[in-house]
Length: 85
Image 1: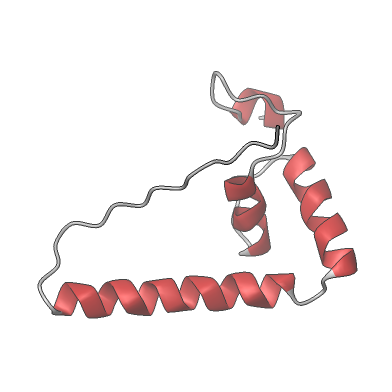
Image 2: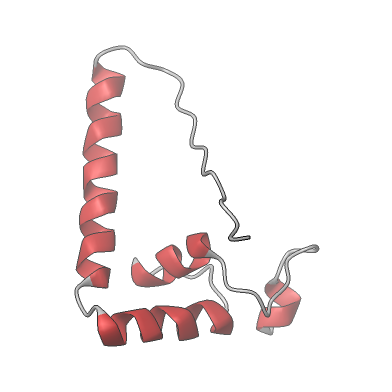
């Protein structure tokens, strides 16, 4: 299955997504060529970006587990998008 076939309806496969770039940096499978290209450009100027993404994911996992042990049962992940004028 090609990347264009795999992209969900309504997703423009020519526009990178920060979530898919993050997925690529973490070694995931849900990213497109445009996301990989941006991630590789980022890595060329900031080689530790992959390590930072993994550390961020590790912190998030630990924080959520801690909160769940304290009784929190609902977690909302909301990413705000800010568009440049």
